[in-house]
Image 1 (cartoon, rainbow, N blue to C red):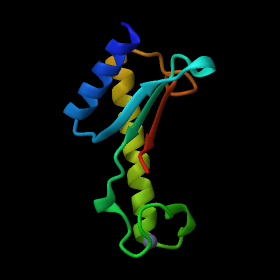
Image 2: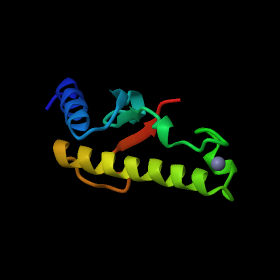
Image 3: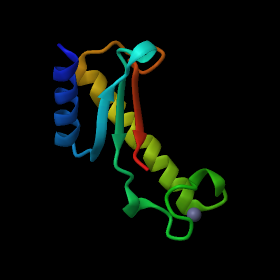
Image 4: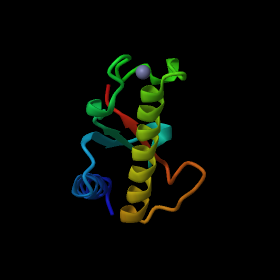
Length: 103
Ligand SMILES: [Zn+2]
């Protein structure tokens, strides 16, 4: 599978599974082989009081904690799906797959 094919496959499968993919590319240089996915930030789940960018600064806020947990869950599920569709080996770096959220 070429990098272009892998990109297309991953994007298609993530979207099919309901993920809102903001961008995706492969690493360059020493990060060659890495897949970088950015998902849209699920703003509808964010804390009304503190917003969506400061979850880690408000550990005493239930809504912020839940939002952070939700992002972690999405991240894990996306990595699991990408591992499955690409057949990448799950090494200590999640198959060299990094999932983050668009700002
Ligand atoms: Zn909050």
